[in-house]
Image (cartoon, rainbow, N blue to C red; front, side, top):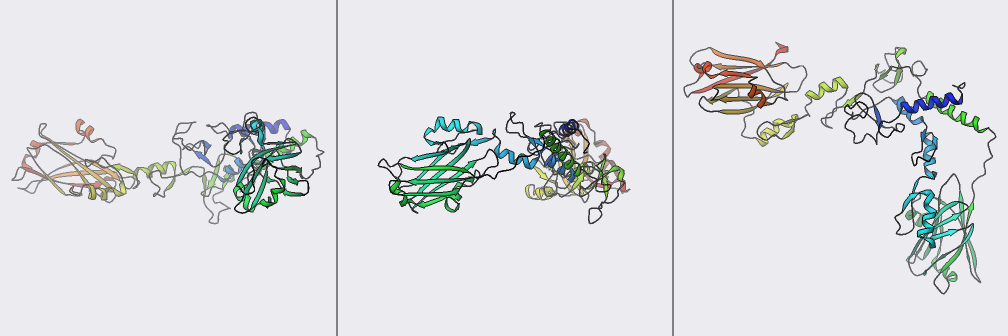
Length: 512
């Protein structure tokens, strides 16, 4: 690492930046990340409303965990300031955070009372000079005047102080209910500086001076007025400094108290090289395999707590986990999407299988209402909304001379079912089939329909596979893809009232 030239170092960082580019904002990825099911990443803010991956168009994953080392690397990647394309600053996260506080291209709001302007920091002084000329205080030592002031009346004013290319907000407030006049000065930063403020009151007979610290820009002014280290004097003390036109005047002086730092003797080009090398070194330190202590070599392996190992290390258990967690190849785990109540977190293939049988998945009630109901609540829904509808009936009868369309709900152990029957007098056929709503995997359900002969011990039976839950009932009946029995074949199975009586059995062929 120490032998890399400046050119090689820049190439390495550029390649790393390109690899870690967000496909949406085209900036360097910012953790926490949002990932698709194929492991493509975007920033969390960019992926907040994404339904599909911008790279591969697959579904975006939810509740995904990714390797700890990846987060560490992203936190060490230098980034460009994003306030403006004109800002060329490119630095590590902590330094960039500090730079953003002083960036000349950052947005800043005007604090003058009743002004809603917001714009680049560079335009603030021009804005105040143009729109609030009476609110600008310039030069190193200046006199500031407040018009229409009375010690017995409430007063609030904000002014912009311009001192040696530095800008400050000055807030003044007179509170007659408490008999106090207060002033706060805050620095609008352009670097790391510290200041104090000197205010001098002067009349023909009285002179006194107050000194207080200039506060940072982000202080809460409302909280600082009652408790801050600010100018706070009795309102009555201001009377000698008011003229006949109700103008309060005093002098304000901003003093720079920034500690002096000795200049560096290192050549700029050497300093830049060292900075870049340090960046790469810090990134490399975050990419060390916990097993062999060398830089990670892909493809990676990791434990369930997302500690990463090289493929070549042949680690089988994690040396960092208290329970020696097993190490396996990287695969994203996702939480079941059907409901927050479902706590299943699985790898892609296993999750797809689980979601097909999850008891929290939403299904359509087929009993004339088409309401969407969680499968776990379907039985209760039918009991409540369709209280007259039979939930289970071993034998069903119908009139041979009457058309009939009927759906019955069957509450099973490993699956729930819809039982569809249709008697078509015109076609002289009886259609029957079951639709399964499985609760466990690997079911191979079949149904057997039997018609008992009331005059003898024999019975007519038909067997067919059970249909899956996405089956379109009308399509099955139109194409006659289900059990379709000619009524003439069942003539001997009618009872004395001319009705067919039949029963059914459901069974898993895998258990036969």
